[in-house]
Image: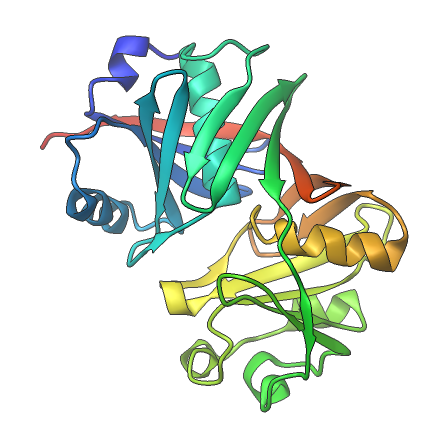
Amino acid sequence: MFNKEEVMNKKTIYQVDAFTDEPFKGNPAGVMIIDESITDEWMQNMAAEMNLSETAFIIPSGNDFRIRYFTPTAEVPLCGHATLASAHVIFKTGLRNENDVINFKAKGGDLKISKQADWIVMNFPKYPLTKIAVPANFNETIGFEPIEGYSSIYNWIVAVAGTEAEIRNAEPDFERMTADGLGHLMITAKSDSDIAGFVVRCFAPALGINEDPVTGSAHCALTPLWAEKLGKTEMDSMQVSKRTGKLKVKLVGDRVEIKGNAVTVFVAELMI
């Protein structure tokens, strides 16, 4: 358990590995609890200093929390692993009890977070999907020929591969991706094993993130896609990046429930 005064003093930052129960796996996120006096420029500089795929800044607001997410180069409207890491910190500090619901207000929507045993459960909006032709030069840029392509919000392209091996073996040319219209890309396939229903990797060089180790928000699009393909509403997902990550997902109407674990790696005091 962390100290409530420590987390609220605007000088404490947490690094949390999300979507894993092991240190050095999953996706690391920075988390700070701040107040309204902190500027956008300061948050962006802090995210660049952390140099993680996302750093989350939480602003208490009555009974709720506003939450903002910054990559090293830009603010993004929604981030799954940084939301999970933030909820983990809020529960661990005792700012909310484990039987409470955390209400986050993000630019990408209102989020409800709860705890179920060792799992943190996030309720996110479902992303729409529109079928598209596979972008030109995809094979040359990413390393395989998809069997289907989709577009979604926030400029995401989703490419479905015929095999899990194609996802694992893909070697994207990050310099070409943004020029080829693939600066926000999810690649996915049905899993070859019983460990998960589907596998995924995510790339966002347009945001300064070549490969995101584990991407919770991507499952806002992937969950309805695979729910239709697999004929089930509850599935396990494995993000097969180098660090790897495990998620449990469920389609609930126009919402997506995403479950994950998290581990605090370090707590640091800012000297500025």
